[in-house]
Image (cartoon, rainbow, N blue to C red; front, side, top):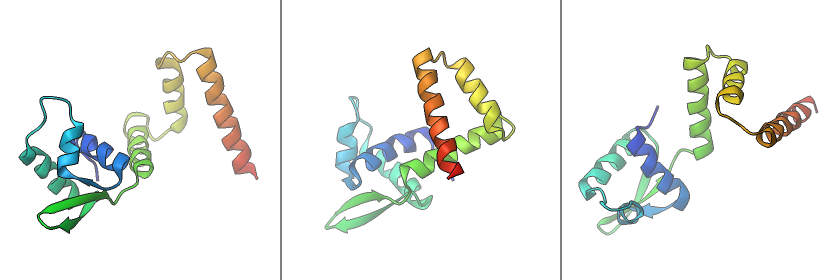
Length: 123
């Protein structure tokens, strides 16, 4: 299941804080801040999608993530690779390294990461 851009923004606040009340989420937004009803609607949809849950304290709800940020973005990237790159990580890597204007230093850092992962998988 996917989140909308607005839902992802709210999830970023929740992932960062781990436990957060709606008022805390609204405070994180720059002015003009979204309406309370807008955030409430987003949180309700996110709860229905299984991304957040909450504990009730009086009239307030403390929200917490049910989905790990790394897992969510890993699946999102996998979906990009499947949809735009014919399910080919090599095509994705080729596009990424050519089209993002990475510096030589950044490419060398990527190479080190790849070499370390190859070494890890061989052992």
